[in-house]
Image 1: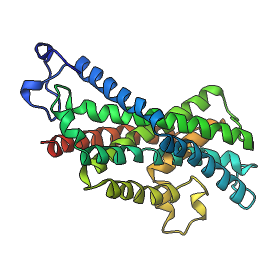
Image 2 (image 1 turned 30 degrees about the vertical axis):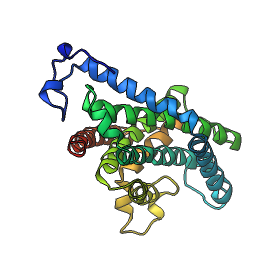
Image 3 (image 1 turned 45 degrees about the vertical axis):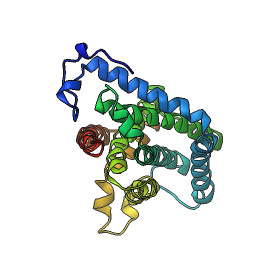
Length: 276
């Protein structure tokens, strides 16, 4: 990761003026950091197994257990309604690896060692979030294959299916920045694990992922309908089933951008504070 200090021109967020970096330097550092995390993945078969088994378990449980008991207006097959919600929930849950990983790096002193190197401060977080995005892609592919075995199909165009998939992965990436901030803010790996999941359960279940929000209690319906996760699920579901995704698509894209900007800024600032 040796970088010629004479080429550094732009100040990186949270870094000292003496170690200011160009954008190209920051991107190269982020790619190096992402590669480090990706190379570690095959050496942790337990984690890799969890990445593969968890999505299979979610798809099978919800489809087999609840598939014959729930009817949704407008969908003859519950799987066509359910699977996009399961996909969205699982990739969002996958963002929790970012919080746990950063908390572990902090507890082992790795963050301090990285900070001693002449690299972009933001590159550590960008590399971590990008490697977790790649892990989420693997999870999604496995989950999609199982869903097809169970009978799920793309009722719309291939372009719509690709768009819905990319939308979910982009949304999960924005959540990785929330998790990055959490991982840098809590005191231990155990706390990071608990904090990263606690708020995601109500977010994903009080939504349109599994049932129509109109079936919920009256006071809860507005919460579910305006939930950012509902916007994501509705948009992806429409794209998969050949329906009109607007206005949910624009809401989902807006939430993705807003969450990324706000929490990336907060996480990078927090990284500068905890690593001093």
